Each structure stands twice: as C-alpha cells, then as structure tokens.
Image 1 (tube, rainbow, N blue to C red):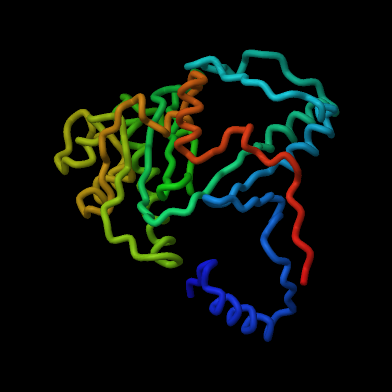
Image 2 (cartoon, one colour):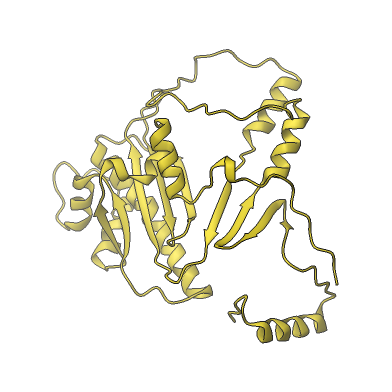
Length: 284
C-alpha cells in the first residue's frame, strides 16, 4: 500500500484501520523522530542531528565555540605508529564518544523523476601500513544520497584496475539490494542502472567475458559485477576523475572538491542548519 501526503482520504482510512488494533495519538507534523530533527521546507525536508550535536559540544565545554573550515591535507596518509597515544581516563573516553558521533544534514527534495544511479571509486594501496585499498561508493535517486559506503578492502590488490574492479563488485551488490528494495516499496526498476567509474580498464574488464593472464588471479567473487553487466542490470559508465563523487569516501580532498562532492550528495552546508531545536506539535 502506498499513500502519499496529498491523499487525505487514504490517510484518514489508514488511521482508522490502525486505531482499531493499536492505541494511537495524532501528533501532527513530524518534528523529532529517533533523535533526528525534521523540518519541512518548500522543496522538501531537512533532517539533522543539530540538537544532539549541540548537547555534545556543551558536554565538552565547547558550547560557545564558533565553526570554522578545517579541511584535511589532500592525499594525506596516516600511519598507525605515528602520533601520541591518549592517556587513560576521561580524555580517552570523551574522544571515543566524539569518534562515534557525526553531525550531518540531508535535504530530500520533491522530484517527479526517480532514477537510481551510483558512483564507485577505489584508492589503490591507500593504507600505508598494509597496502590495502579503500572502496567508496554512493547511490542517489536524483535528490540526495540514499546509500553510501567507505570500507577498506579485504585483500591486497596488484593494480589500480583490480582495486577498482573489486570496488565495483561491492557497489554492484549494494545496487542489486537497493533495486529489490525499491521494487518492493515504491515502483518497478526496469532500466539499466548506471554506476559511474573513472577507471577505463576496470570497465573493460567488467564488459569483456574473456579472462586475461593479468587478471586470472582475481578472486571469482569479484566477477559478480561482470555477470550483472552482461545481464544488463547495471552498466559501468566512464566519468571524469574530477567528477567522481565517490572520491569523498576514499581520500582527503581539497576544500573546493570536498564542498562540490558534498553538495552532490545532498548534504547541506552548516549555514543552512536549523538554528533551534524543532519541537513536536501538540497532540489534538
């Protein structure tokens, strides 16, 4: 059953049916849900964790701090044996708490079209400790990202092509799951889903069923992407490295690129964040 926000009759009937089995209260427009603050805008909804983030800052005596731009050094490589260890006690516990907290806001705009597409990238041998690569991918439906991932690969790859190919396999698995989910709750996805990749060799490897001497060592599981390309469920499409949105999940970027890719994901700049906590409407 799909009921839109404009179907007042359908909403009323659903409320009546549910109230027969469950005790219900009508709280009006959503304002806060599971710790998320929700604001309805003209072109969609704004979701944030501002209230929680503010309480966290106050806990660490930083409630009056001003925000500032602190981009990471581009292409910076961290080593596990560098730096100074935190001392046992409150500082270490506070850092662990901050580490698990991320403030973000996503804006989902109203859209007449619903086209699933994705980006995938890999930072070959990016970990200087074990030389494993990092996979990054994201999927959107035209308004904002609905799925994203940044994860270190399990095996050491011997080339950038192999790293990108393994990353494409991970993205394809997520794509197949998203396709089934959308089919179940929204509408049938009956088109080839584009996944943008900036490595031409990986694209050719996925499209060519012939095994080459330089690729025969690649684990069988990674050829899952080739199967889905041949079945025309997905299509790996070339994208310029400068337009590779998934770069934001694999490496440190310059401020300009970071902001460009952040906007492409539908993440709103902090200047658009809610200034006050959203209050839940009184029940009626």
